[in-house]
Length: 294
Image (cartoon, rainbow, N blue to C red; front, side):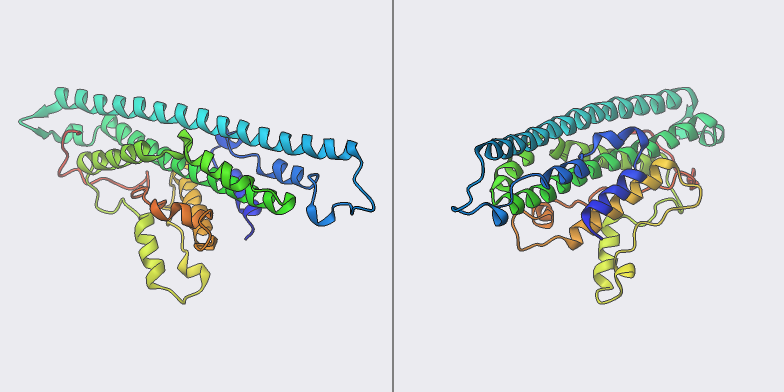
C-alpha cells in the first residue's frame, strides 16, 4: 500500500483530537505538482520567462517554510503531551500510595481494596495512559516517515538535495527524541505488573510480533505482518494504538535498508517496536499479589 493511503487511513483511525497535529502530507504532495521539474525545463532555444522562474523560486521557498512550520507543530504537540503524561503518571502513583495508606494492613492489601472500585479505576487509568504514550511514540515515527517521503518526492521533482539537510534537521527535533517517553512507558508497565499481576491480560507485544514474523518468513504477507490482536471490548485508545503500531511495522518492512536516509535505516538503531506490551483494558487482573507502586 502506498504511503499516502496508509497515512490517510491512520489519520482516520487516530484519536480525533490528534488529527490536525499530524503532517499535512496530502497538501504538501499537491504543492509538489506545481514545483519545477528539471525533466521538463525549457531548452536554451525556449528559455523560461523570468516571471516563471520567480514563481518557481517562491513556491520552493513556500514549501520549505511549510515544512519548518510542521516541525514546530510536531514539537509543540509532542512536548505538551509528554509533559502531560509525566504529570498524570505521577498523580496515579500518588493515588495508589493514598489507597495503600488507607487500606493496607501488615503490607498486604485487604480483599476489599483488591476489588474496590477505586483500585480498578486507577488500573484503567494506568492502562489508558500507557496506550496514549505508545500512541505518541508512533506519532513521532509516522510524522518522521512522512517527512522522509515528501522530501524524497521533492528532490525527485526538483532535482534538489533538500532531503539530506532537512532529514538531519528533523533528527535533532524534540518530537524525534523519544528516549524519555520510552522510559516512562516502561515505568508504567512495571507499575502495572507490580500493582495488578495478570493471568491473561497482556496480549502479544510488538517485539514478540516481530519474532513471530521472522519465524514465519516465507509465509504470506498477511501472516508475516499480523498486527497485535485486540481483545473484545478494548478501549478506544487501545484499538487506535494497535492500528498505529501496525502502520509503523508495515512502513519499516516496506522501506529500503540500503539507503541511509530511508525509514528502515534511520530506525535501524532504534527499536521502533520497543513500546512494551499492549494491555487490553477489559482483561481481568489477578489480585492475589498486589504491591505498592515504584
